[in-house]
Image (cartoon, rainbow, N blue to C red):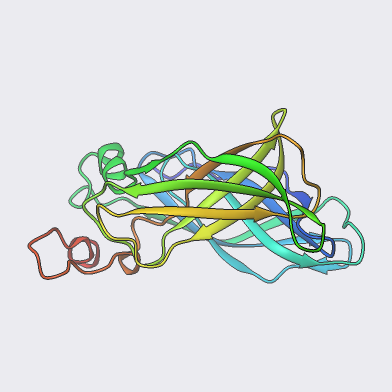
Length: 220
């Protein structure tokens, strides 16, 4: 059967720094055996962000964002345009059980992220989120990205992404992100992997040890 349409949430704007803003929206893929790739951009008043690539894995509630949008004053409510949607049916030869396949590739142990406020040398306050991510998958990733969402009383007050370089299977990494702009005194951070597991280019080749080279099965 055909894929059901993406559910595209309302676009929002957040203050990122004193002179820049972050725009984001939630894109939900209701299908369990299709994933989507697409392009998106945000528009707010006279501002139109550059087109970026996005994706949504089967069943994923994905955050798409454009960070660091320069503006002299806070932009009005943005809209998001999602175009060039391509649906990819998951090959059952690659992933006979899609949920299990995704769980195996998405196996990151992420410690409880902390949120604290601090003051820099210029006496400006900023927020800090730290967490540890451990790659318990059998796969090594070139540049995995993690979305970090900051919430206060159930409302998103900050969003960013952290990109790691060459993340080996079995490796643990400490990550710190900083928040500027409207910094709440208390907040809760959530960390979500943002990786297209069906893209063979995200995987590093096994390093001289027998292992499953996911790139072979994905490009067959």
